[in-house]
Length: 175
Ligand code: IMP
Ligand code: MG
Image 1 (tube, rainbow, N blue to C red):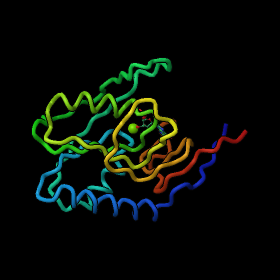
Image 2 (cartoon, rainbow, N blue to C red):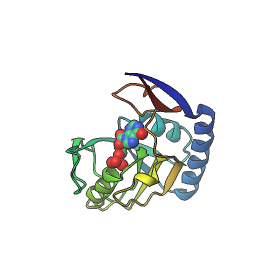
Image 3 (cartoon, protein in one colour):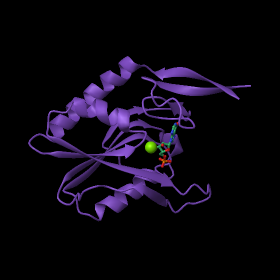
Image 4 (cartoon, rainbow, N blue to C red):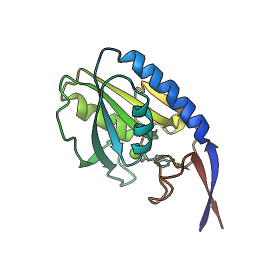
């Protein structure tokens, strides 16, 4: 089946919104050092664009997780494919995600990371599909609320493709 990509959020709109998010984060963390946890692979593009605009001192760590994906699980289990390189205890931690869908990933990640007692633990997501939520997550910084559409680009993939698109697009399947 062929697929076509329709632009949902242009590169210009993405950059403008990331400017605003960075401004908010710079104000909120003034005088502090921030540890960004970039969730691989989808949030790489967003993390970079955001971090380029931050004026507070920033360090990075990376995690890669996947849900167990049996399709029936309601426990919110996730599998850690790549764990953090360093400790987060006492640090100002900001998890940067590409998209919040059911909330399974972030809900579970927040409970795993909070055990290490960071000084603060917040969430920044580029996109949010609130109508899909099954697991509650408090989001501190949210780029765009979107409808329940499968989107790609700016880090997000469909079968590992389209991550490099500079905009967010909707995948349309054609017969
Ligand atoms: P959640 O755990 O259900 O909130 O799902 C979050 C993860 O599902 C995201 O980090 C993405 O990797 C993936 N995902 C959810 N919706 C989309 C989408 O529309 N396009 C691409 N990936 C998605
Ligand atoms: Mg992801």
